[in-house]
Image 1 (cartoon, rainbow, N blue to C red):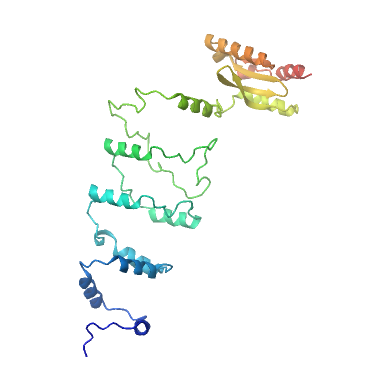
Image 2: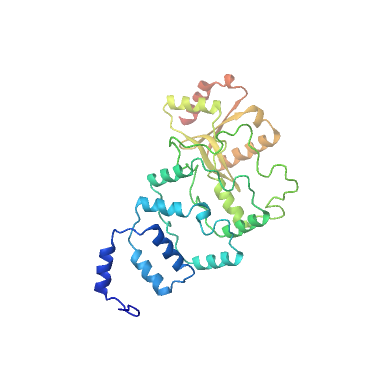
Length: 317
């Protein structure tokens, strides 16, 4: 009896499906099915049905491994091929407006570990390559208007893997001084050459600079004075910020209610420009109601900390 034009009912389809479950196809059968389907285009309706049927189903680890092996190297349909500009534009247009699946999510520690393991021993595809000027320009254009990841974060940013054992530094195994990518390139024009920052940018830069503590480390005489103040139970603040005209200044030590202490290295602060700057700072702070005490230090061993403490106490009483 001919079956041409015959469509099984839903019940028959279900019975056939149950009967065939668990029965693997032979390699020959799979090859024939593959050849029969080559060149065929699946309709949008069929695509939708396949998508709905696959939702919620997770492939086993073994299946994932087999799928990965089947697409590796020259087995991949795109192996050795390069997408044309037209196809790249089409892919870009089709992705516009879509929300990335990882948006708002973070990799778990287990996922991070697996990613790290999977990349160990592999050579980066970009190793030894340099981006062309055209590529650099495109990268710059694509990042315009994007908000930096650290915008609004104050102070030193701590790496996500800080303190984690087993983290390999990027320059491990590289001996000697590392050479910059543009070393020896004569005629490289700085990106800011011929340009000027807008007033808004200058204002933002000034505001950001207020949170920078300079110098980052205290000098030895400053530390000696701070330790002596701690022993005397005198509370103080380090590097308190003050408004001086159109700029700002941080004093070495500030003691409530109105005492500013500066520990000046003679070599640096004896220069004419620095002496004039120090006088201007002192005058401005006095106008604001603060007392200024300066201790000039030529050599660390000559700094009399006890005399400095006595002088500070006399101002406190």
